[in-house]
Amino acid sequence: MLTTFLPFIIIIVFFLASSIKILDEYERGVVFRLGKFTGVRGPGLIILIPVLEKMRKVDLRVVTMDVPTQDIITKDNVTVKVNGVVYFKVDSPKDAIIQVANYIHATAQIAQTTLRSVIGQYELDEVLEKRDEINGKLQVILDELTEPWGVKVTNVELKAIDLPEDMQRVIARQAEAEREKRAKIISAQGELEASQKLAEAANILGSQKEAITLRYLDTMREISLNNGSSTTFFPIPVDIFKSLLK
Image 1 (tube, rainbow, N blue to C red):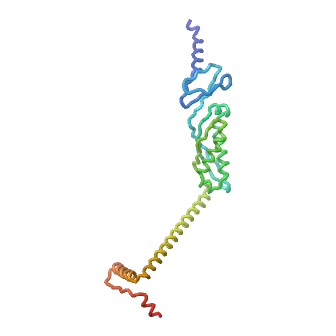
Image 2: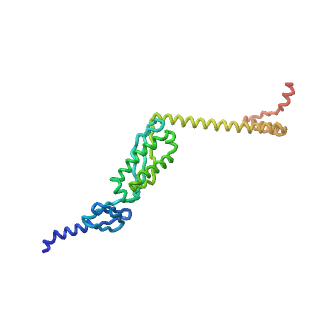
Image 3: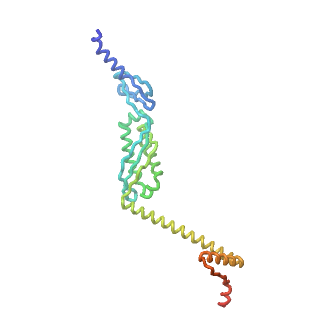
């Protein structure tokens, strides 16, 4: 008796097992009944009508996707190798299943083409200096392009920008020249400030005779200490030489 109904029991258990699904908190199920969309379910226990209904699971967590290295020609005709990373997540499970066959692959392809297009609008110096601006522009463009697929692009970052060896040497020479320029400017500013201070000191000493005498005495003391000898120096006012010359 049991042997007779065993195949039917197995079939019933199989259908029941196939109709019960459990979705995690970060998952949603897009349900189709006879090929027509009926709704998004989950998380938790999902019961499907055997044979009539089927479900496609969608992960709502943020996906980190590397953009492969691209050979890109900048606006000033310099070839650079650029790669990046895109952070995105599914915002609409329904559109992610219905509007595109594979939303991850589609996002990867559109990210590569958009990267080449945006970088090509900048010159090399701008690419190196305006990375934050380029990242923001890429994020806005990708978010607009992937919105019909139910995908939300949260962030885009350029990871590495590799330059040709000849351009690296040119940039290194430019950086060295810029450092030398700054050093010369700082040195010139120091000399200017020193000359201004000397001029102020000369004016003060020239207007006060006692001050210049004290300066002579202090200079004699320093010379005597440095030479380590008993030689004595006597200051002679410059005015004496002026009167002799006249």
